[in-house]
Length: 91
Image (cartoon, rainbow, N blue to C red; front, side):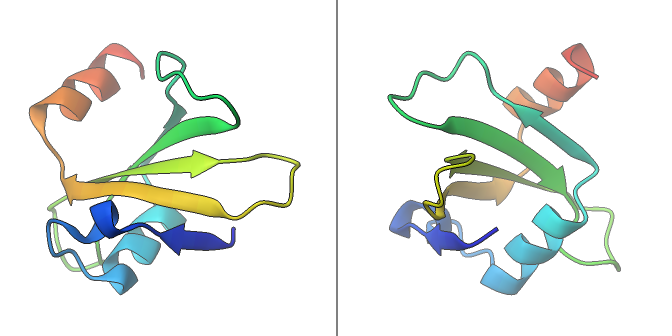
């Protein structure tokens, strides 16, 4: 997936290499159906930023399947209650 990191994805200081690792090794991936976008879809990735931690991060990516447009990495942060709860409610 070719991706562009938006400024908002760097707000919490998580390094890009950790973001890429978490996406490639995600332990939870889900399209967020409730997120309305004009084009494409928003996908949630939850994963560890590297292999030597139990800490998880949440990543929101705006994808444009079958369009050839690059994905936009919108949000990256340490896993918070909102998406912990979402994962529990949507296994």
